[in-house]
Length: 138
Image 1 (cartoon, one colour):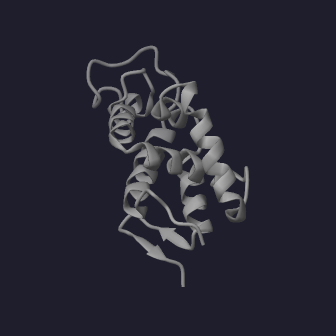
Image 2: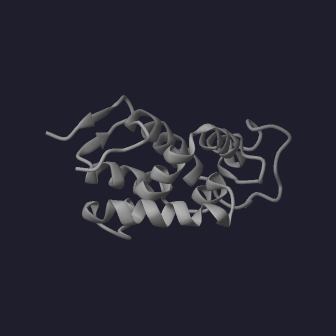
């Protein structure tokens, strides 16, 4: 089994944050109220481009080492079904070569279902993620 350069706990944190980000939708309330309570909290799920969760995810990813970022992209691709655990070395190499395409955070935030793909990728490593912790699959 290959080794991960990024800790499962860091991936678990990103899964949680990515799932928070994934529930956002395009602006759908043109008659927004003066406050969230007046608006029945509808605007909370709208993505207006100033999402603090996206900024938190981007800041976290940007602070990771290069190897951790490469593993994160490879893990997402593994979970997406772009390869198998036996092809991990190739997935990592492709992720490393793709780094010249722009910031890793922007690339990952543009991936719908990022949290699910990361969770699936961890599963391929025999790790199960829950909101409380990342644990080995029994």
